[in-house]
Image 1 (cartoon, one colour):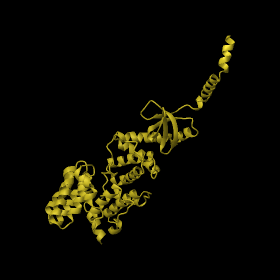
Image 2 (cartoon, one colour):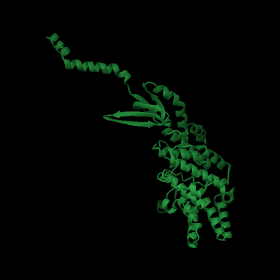
Image 3 (tube, rainbow, N blue to C red):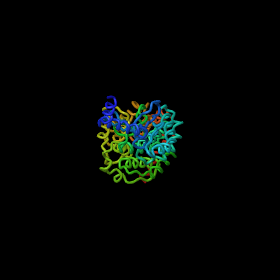
Image 4 (cartoon, one colour):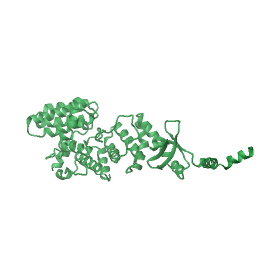
Length: 387
């Protein structure tokens, strides 16, 4: 009787199928085990499957129930990857030094130790410039923050242009998310980088760098040409005819960063007819104060002080003086140029004493402003341009 019962279980096709399936799963388990990714800053690994390992980082898939979520871990976020996928462990080993260096740099930027972060990011930026991936964005933004922290604005332009290009390509920021944004979220403009320069060695180097900056992105290319033109004006180098240069192009005029920088630079040049309507470009910033509001008042002030109507000129002076009065603390660079422009306007109106008073205020309130070392640079540039 017992033997018969055992045989009946053995011969039951459903029982045999279940046992066979269990055998297959047991034999396959060592080859199908989950990959493990150990993120920086966490002792707990993420279990799932490595989908891709390349310049951008590790694309890692986690499956729960019927949902699969793919997350890109940029190299500054990857401490260790355990995987049996063919070639993936070897690729991780190739990127391991980069992962370590970039993590150190990003961590130092986030704790505002910029002096220690910049020497790491500088060579990484040279290697990654022109790439279009999330890790390249971590490097570009980190270097931008470092250079602005030491007021190296001319040296910060190329990192910002790369950041602009990467953001416009659709790449999402994955680092520095707890820090104050370094670019204006609504436009992509870097508020600390108006296209305003003086005659310095740093600006000469910037012009050289921009002349060799090649990018397949119309809006970023336009921004590069705008900053190069601003540098030429400050250095007294001949520039392209304004009517040709400021011709609006459908390829870039929809980009808010290109429009805003165009408005400021055209106002500096006193271009007629004005290629971009300042009030329309900056309309929201006059109503709602934001990081670019000082740019708005500065550009409108410059556009107004050159017209013949006296009341409009006075309105322009009010705009210019509003910049240091309301925003001088956080935007001292633009504030200094606004004071200098107001002084020029007052001199044009025959009010030399008032102009001298504003220039004295510039030296007193902003003693490290580059205009104090090269006060004649913008006017020299304008004079040479006319010759």
